[in-house]
Amino acid sequence: MGWFFLPRILAALMTLVSVMVLTRALGPVDYGRFNLIMVAGTVAYAGLFAWLTASISRFHTTEEFGGRALPVALGTALRLGLGLLPAMALMLFLLPESFQLWVGLGLIFCLSHAMHEIGLSGLRVQRIGRIYAVVTLLRPLLGVSLALLLVVYGYGYAGALLGMALGAALTGLWALWRVGRRTGLDTPDRWMLKRFFSFGTPLALVSSGSMLFMMLSQSLLARYVGLDAVGIFAAAQALALRAVGMPMDTMRGVSAVSIFQSFEKDGHAGSDKELAQHFSLLMLVSVPVVATLVLANDTVARLIFDQVFRGDVAKHLPILAVATFIAGIQGAFYGFAFTLSHQTKLQLFIMVGLIAGHSLLSLGLVWGLGAIGASWAVLATSVAGLLAYALIGKRIRPIALPLVEFRMMGLATLAFAPFAVLADHNGSLVMAAGLLVIGGLAFVAVLHLAGHTGLRLVLNGLRQKTRSG
Image (cartoon, rainbow, N blue to C red; front, top):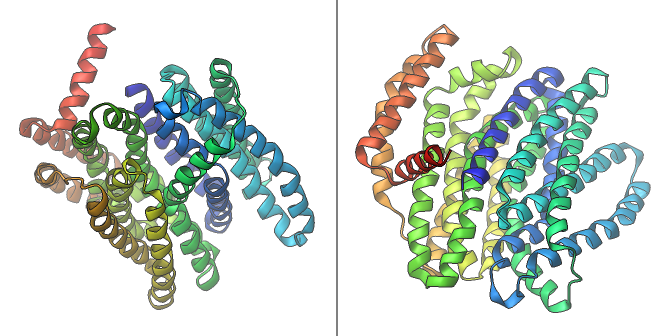
């Protein structure tokens, strides 16, 4: 598991560095443009390609496909990509000149992101851990380096986007080559395509829910407040998503293979055991970060952002951190009720309702409260989504929520809280960071004394690695 989880966490940290650097290089307005286009490209990927990545994870080990799921998905992705290129070129030609740059950059990012994600999915199901780690870490390194180079040479937000897209494309090509060399490409038949599409499309659109909500919120902010507000909101949300959402989503992707395999082998009893361990790990990778962003939001903003962003980002952080955590429980835990029972269309219907509600909430709260209203709308939508998943999921495939986890995490957070509050009221950044480290150690110590399952699994894994090394 370490090869597939730790690199994603390190990549998330590198992405946070990119947020820190790009916000300084671009400023609020251009960072707002950069983020709007990047989010739109990610949403386009979800609608066009993500059904294939979802199907690779779900069907790679099932008997009905006879081991052909991955080569068929690769062959389909190649045909789809080549078929879309002329359609995209025609669309750009027909668009007004004022929209061509934004749409073109969004499409380039979409294709690059698709190459990277499909390649990573293939490496994950084939358990090629070392290459997976290298590809995962190289993307932000290359992307940020190229983005900064192009920004320095005067290409602004467009250069930043092209740099990030190149980082995804180059690493994605390598991953696809390594996977394709093992499996080859297979021609899909109609039955397989229908099976992939019917399962993967609803799940892909649902998985992109956070990006859809982000795009909606940012568009409303751009319309009613201004692009500078978009840049500040986007910076805070990028931090919350990378620090909280990405580890939870990565843990879902890593655990999914084991959960599905246990279900295929031992039925619900086997998958329930894996789900309990999975939830414990979810809490371990998310709660300490959420506690930091909520209780020491000013310190985090001071550490990462410059003066232009700092004050306003700190106001958004606690709300968005809690919202991202709630959304993570919804998708990375309760979402398995729908995928195990092949009821992904239900997830799509729920998401459509949430989008409609989020649109009205965002419009009203942004109109009434200004930029901070966008964050409150995200939190309200996250709570509504969690309730919908829990109540509807209970009817199709009950999943027990391990309440003992919340008790343990509550005690650990109480041990961490005094240090975080002191850090937020300390004028020295060095002292503030030191207090957060001490608080983090207290957090881990409480979990260790309480016998936390996730921490025990991590420590056992580290011991085994040390002995084998």
